[in-house]
Every structure is written in C-alpha cells, then in structure tokens.
Image 1: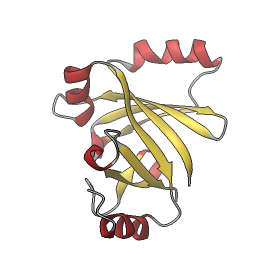
Image 2 (image 1 turned 180 degrees about the vertical axis):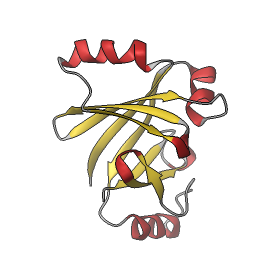
Image 3 (image 1 turned 90 degrees about the horizontal axis):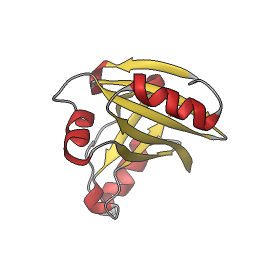
Length: 131
C-alpha cells in the first residue's frame, strides 16, 4: 500500500491551479472532468504521489457541500491497493464502515471506493486500484 494522492477541495480550479503551479514549479500533469462524481480535477505529480485539486461542477456534489460547510482544504487521503474488491471485503469483515461496498469509476479511469471517516479517525479515506 502507498499514498496515491491527496484530494484538495477548491472553489475554482482557475484560482487554485496557478497557486499550486507556483508552489510546485510546474503545470498540472492532467485535467479532467469526472461526471459521475460531479467534479473537475487537476492532478499534479509530486514524487510517487499526486495532489488532486477538486472543483465541484454541480451544487449538489460532495465537493460543493464540503466547500460550503468547511471551506477549501484537504478533502481526502487516497491509498493505492492491489485488489480493491478483496480489500473492501476484508475491511468490512474487520468492522470498517464503508461508504462504497463496490468499486466505482474515479479520475484517470481508476476503480475507487471510500471508507467512512467514523471508522478512520475522522479522515475520509479513498482506496484506488489503478487499471
């Protein structure tokens, strides 16, 4: 297991991308729309991990609700796993509360699932299995 990326909720990619470009000394490696999750994503590679900036595309998206309630900031930590369905089954057997019982499609055509913060010391954890 390794840290795959850190998700940061932002009000606007147009405002946040220049900040992170200046901080990291590079442009995003890619930008994409993830319609299923109602977000636009800008991804910066940082060593073996990434920083994902997440902008809501709809007022009813998870990111829009997060920004409205808490403001911009760290939204989730993502860990890379080898076999997502097996990891989810194992965690559920151990009593970990799952938001997603089955993998769904995430940015970069990956398979993802979220763990509920009540089971992870208040941190929203995303698990990702890259294709």
